[in-house]
Image (cartoon, rainbow, N blue to C red; front, top):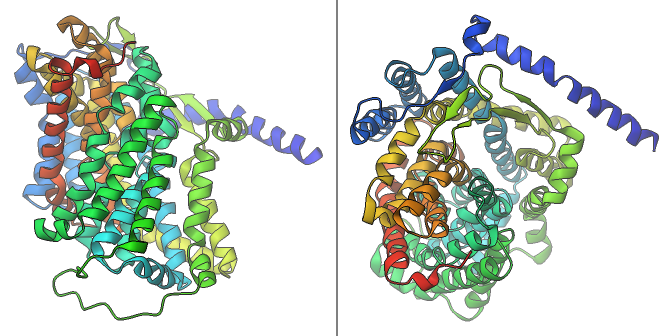
Length: 580
């Protein structure tokens, strides 16, 4: 009892420091006159007098970033800095955003990039490093090979099914980091490991982190959460069936894909059926968790009775050496880091656990000079609304903390000393430092785009397409995720715009809002944050442009397919739209 009271006292003292943190944050950012910092500013969306021209100008930072990455193969941190500079120039010079607000928005984004996003990446790679350092990853590889030594089956198990479980429990970059690192450890080449992890992390994203994207969408639009869950659950299951086939086709080609069609169908159909059932008859919270467990089970059962006729491996990859399958005890020990990780991530994602942990540790404060100083205006929102800017230091409830604890517990259980764990962590930190900085700059660019209204200009251009809006509605969500790196952020960003536009055109707002989330999942594979995370996990720092080129066309084609599905639901199969 005394211990609990002391702990609460310490936490209360920490929370009392939030005002000091806020002041320090402000002083760190810049030295500006107080009256300039306190000035509010209303976003303008058409500074060029033509919404399409304004949208092109607003897209300049994205063109610079993606062009340098994919076209000129510039290292990600340099491309990110260039994109950030251009976004600040456009925001301040053309959109007339006060410099103090623009710089504060960029700093707020950079802080979010380091925590919680960077913290997730660092701790996920730390877990992988522990597994490798203890020699248990070799045993894990043999246990997976005992199921199937075929690379096609391995990518279905890890990039699609297991990645979906991590997405459902944690989200926010965790599945890409974990899946890509595991594929590398299994012997995949770096580029396919990164690209396949990104493509696999699509269909589950809308229900990721225990339904967080849809919960946020319901909050900003005030549409029924159950109806949004049902609508997304009537759009994405088709892609849940398609993506496993798509993964194998990208990696091995059409003929090799057809050789393993039973495995692709088992993984995708089992996932898609459960995705539909849970989203329509329960809600968005456990869709990915339940669907992924059923998908893994379906694959494991299938492999008991069926195996590919040939074993597919990469060109120039040596033939698999016949290895003795590990004993049950050996395999169980080897899976400890990943089982502990899965358990803790799932527990950390439960609303009750998150709330309890936040009560003990959460620190938050309004970002000085930015909170409620930027006004988002009509027609992006129904009523002019000041934008919030709250920075949260939820150090205990953060997903990265769950991963860090999983790493420590796993290290101890696998016999590592505290000193060895410390050395490993420092090594992981050194290896990921540049990438963490890159993620911070990428998020700075995204936040500058958001608070300056550049994203809204691009969104309004999509929303002005009239009869074609149901087709372009998912592409707007795709753009939002590509800009922000998060389906949740995209829903917060464009949810109101989708709703308002749909109501003006006589289209169901449930359909349009859900389409934002469904289309957004296809943008997840090309957002800068995910590209950098995949590069870190596969040791491809400096090759982010190559990874982007690997997945870019797939992202666009799949997003267009979502557009056709939504347009069909709007005009041909309106009975698929739930009544709110």
